[in-house]
Length: 225
Image (cartoon, rainbow, N blue to C red):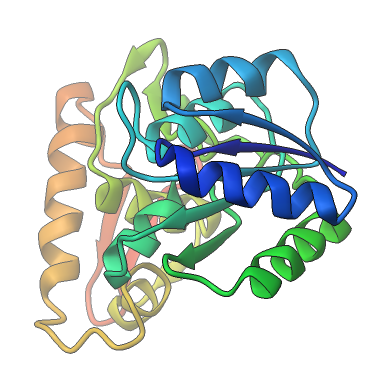
């Protein structure tokens, strides 16, 4: 197993390297996100261990860049950040697993082996509805040749609508699929995001792709408007 370890804590990285090598793994080490991204681009790895907060480039950005380029090597985030939204961001940017420092070394090894057994994921298919084109891997959206900037949450709502294009989806379905299952805020937050999407995806292009079906929910026109 060939592993890339990217962590700016040099003593910790050295300890992990020696431990993984004792498990008969080959380990390359980088101490910042820029060098780590360069190594990941220039060498094939079975798995990548990424710290989150690093000089030069965060682990989030490095992982997102790899995914946008079609590199689906399994990524394990290793970090001191233990907030649930930190984990959500890590997984949303393309990470496959998340381990919080301080960690159990046997658990790290077991998770690496599990990631390698599963292998690299396939790049998600690009979603299309008429001239509306959403690339889930690169997290980009275009209408025709025009790029449209969305926030992460807006992108997730539109992703769900495009996967169900032509179908009516309820507000509860959007909440269940886009927000955390423990979300207990105002369900009308869905209406807020639908309004934001219309202002960015429809109105500048004089279209009405995102429809409100009164009494039921929302529908993205199959032809993208």
